[in-house]
Image (tube, rainbow, N blue to C red; front, top):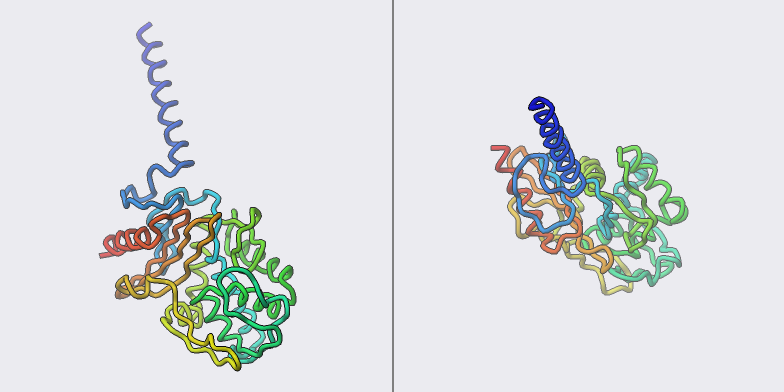
Length: 282
């Protein structure tokens, strides 16, 4: 009798433990490192910028809306296509009509304006030009629709299993989503590219534009100015998506990359995560 009672109690304990484990996996109550970093973000992840090892995660596979962090993929694809075709980044291109007047953050591009792809990329990553993203998608992909297909194909190649892009700039769309884990994979790949790293680590850029007063692009990513070793990469915000941030920093031989989404204290969250990462690497 006592044996049966013991077995019953043990079964209950195991069931409760299993239930708690599943809850933790789903809701991110604890992270892979076991550390209490204390981030406000609904979803967060920290990886080693070298080998990509996950150092911390919170709801890392939960659906999230990336906003303008989407532009990391847009820039990466643009650079890869240029390199594949041995095409110079300094070449000037004509802005298509569809890129004029795009809502949100803007470079105030005009249809027919001649501007270099390099200037478009700096405008894309420093001031988050939504019109720049549309222009690059049209020029590199032939159309936004085809460029979006390229984005989704690249995401799959990188191992992103919960990502679907619907546009090149991150304007809110229910069918435009990702996870912080997937976005970390994309950022990790992008940061391998020398030109990409140079662009996102630049504080200010002066574009060569005719008949346009908006030529100085100032990087909106405060990580560059506030955090020791900060070197990029992209901020994002829409009312529906919330605050999103992909940040990176390098100290000595160590590089950290973190992603936070649905993050009221986005920069503080990133700094706490990277502080934790650097403290573990000493």
